[in-house]
Length: 96
Image (cartoon, rainbow, N blue to C red):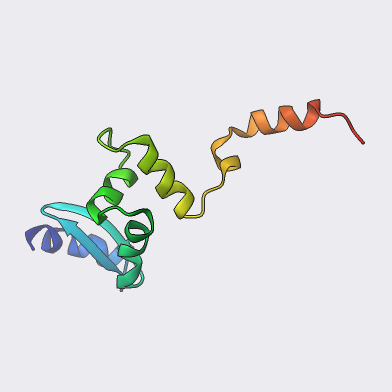
């Protein structure tokens, strides 16, 4: 509760009316609706604290879980490819 009270002024200014989750002193996530906080965790079969570690790019999270979270959140394989590689491959293709 101390962490929430500590962050309350900032939360009200930056995320008014949103739900927040904490684990101890650490802010995990915010969302417009309570169910959104647990939706991604449920979709990838992980806990909310594990999702928070994915979001924080923790080295304690497996690549498999990071990718499951990425694709479950709507990410596409093309989002992982740097734009300059995509443009080079399009330029190298023969025209039909």
